Image 1 (tube, rainbow, N blue to C red):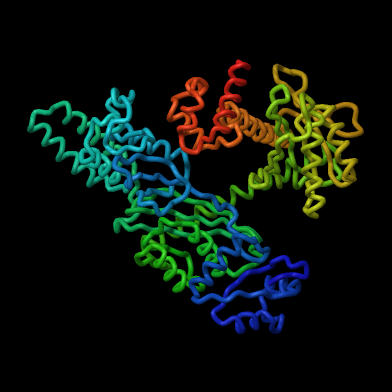
Image 2: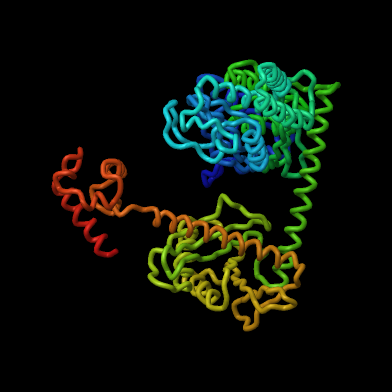
Length: 593
């Protein structure tokens, strides 16, 4: 459903479209307040047909994610949680952290809710199991000498050909059991190996196995058994208030709690509970690939049979949706609801702190507009080289990282920060005006009076000086061994100072620091990329393949410089003209040195 400006208000699906649409346009007294609210704005209805209900369900979820309609439930924190990928499709598998699960015959474990948790798991695995850590592509033949890990007893050195594929696969099986949480089976296997080694008087090997058993037992003691049925379950609950809700997903695998996920839901607009939960489930599982056998819900939802059928087809085995009333499963729902309530209270507290800091900022700086949306700018360069600018967005005192932007300086040569700032701001706000996009309430620049004047020039040129507030934040003099921040404003000669514990001061510092971090990370990336460039890349006709072929044939740049025209033209794809250009360019580079 669209409004008169063709903006999408609501996306839905129906088995019988006529009946679904007609249900909206009936006596307004029978309609939900939310429905009455957006129907008054509907100017047009568009539709697509699909072959099956499952296709319609998937399409609805994809469209909601893409278009973010105002009157649909929106899954805001749609992040990709980390997984551990064991490359079992290789002869000598290794572990790595990934954000997406692919159909590449590797074995995936997770999802994990924190990268720190993943890193700790990997460190523990490398400590217990001698799994390789290199990224070499191995076929069993040696490619290099053993590394320090082998000397420390933490790797079997398959890269040096010191272990057979069969022996290495035994280690991989143990790692797989550990990551699947089947530690009782793993301990049983390790004990059998230890006893066999002891009987054969291989006491050093038996001692190593004993230490592994102790390490795995420690992990087993820490794991909390949630379900004695040892099932894979997702437990879903949520807490809603006004136009926002917090959804909680408890992840249980093999009866053990692996972690939790929290999601913010927006644009509820008094939506019915079953529709809210149904919409969340469809959007959440559209992205998930590691599905449980059972999903526990706090109450029934619409399309439950259809969703179960869709997830079962996606998983390849049956997925059940259950609404427990009593027993341990109901206790899990209550646990998830308590966590969702706690997350909602924390979010509300953060919102109150953010509102107070914005109100204080407006009062202290005398801003015309309430600074709901603040855009911060910073620059980064070394003597004018690899100059870049950054723009960060904070809405209601919190960073909106998806709206951050970075800029390569195009028109300014040499060291001129003010000209660079004018270029970046002009590019930013000219585009917003062209697209008729919303403008920020406040622009905050990392800098002093000179940067303030440069910002004023841009706003005056674009006729925005009365529509957007402007301020610059700079580090001032030291007071009590602390550098105080000075905020410069147009039409004010003296800077505004804030108390050390001022919430608005902390907010401005966060914006400045985030803009600085974003700018300097981009500058380092460009500088590092330039450092790694080969002189061969500047020669017309020499691409990546030919560059690698030349280096493989001659070994290094010095040997390429010494090569004759006959040696160069003997290579496939190297013509005489290209060989002459290659020699000329290489001689010029040598002359520079």
